[in-house]
Length: 304
Ligand code: NAP
Image (cartoon, rainbow, N blue to C red; front, side):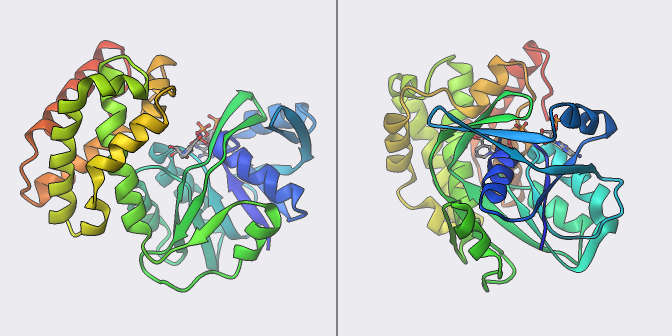
């Protein structure tokens, strides 16, 4: 079965190049004819830079308009592009199609599932890190892990062996929602504050009380919205992450610094909306959202 990969950005390229290197059939689905022409002008190859070593992989590409049926789709765009990208390919999906969703945060997965009601949607939570050096070239910056799961069906799919062949570290879990919620909570406790205090993750050691207050509200929220496992020892985990990644700039910090749209709607905004739905009182989290939105507005960036 061919792996159709939508989005030749950081994570999409990281997956596509490793699958291709493992000898598996991969096809890229690019945004439009212009991007396809640019890719072909680059020799229709993607470059993976790993420990300073470049591997160049020939991978064929197409646009969403191609007629070829899609049985397996890796959706590797940003959360705010996922619904539209999936909708554009809905007609091409086979009756037994499976989609793997690489988006950070929560909210986009349900939006995608609503557009492709017959496909099996498998969610991923990735701790791998990659960035684009230039177009069609990705740097594998941080080794990590990929947790995969289907909130609607605990049985593992038959393609995990492909990931094994490709050397993509992964584990199938029936508790993918716990993973996604935990990651979202860590993100809410750290990323917005690094933007507002203009600091690396380690800079939050100077804002210990603010972090502790947010963790208390996030813990309460997770307990009330049916995710108690994601709430366990959240504060100590946040402190551990702050220390372990002290020298790093958070993804949201980098997005803002580079004038890129953030995924706020699928992170802090999603947490606040869930709190409202469950009548859970989280004043500091709400205030954090207001401050972050004001900051993005001041910078001329989208607030959704
Ligand atoms: P990215 O580098 O911006 O890549 C997204 C790609 O999707 C871009 O190449 C974009 O095309 C493409 N795209 C968007 N809509 C499309 C469409 N309709 N058809 C075809 N292509 C489309 O983003 P990323 O860093 O890989 O992040 C993807 C997701 O993974 C995010 O939710 C992110 O939070 C998550 N994540 C990323 C990392 C990481 O280290 N990068 C780690 C963990 C999680 P253009 O190039 O034409 O704009």
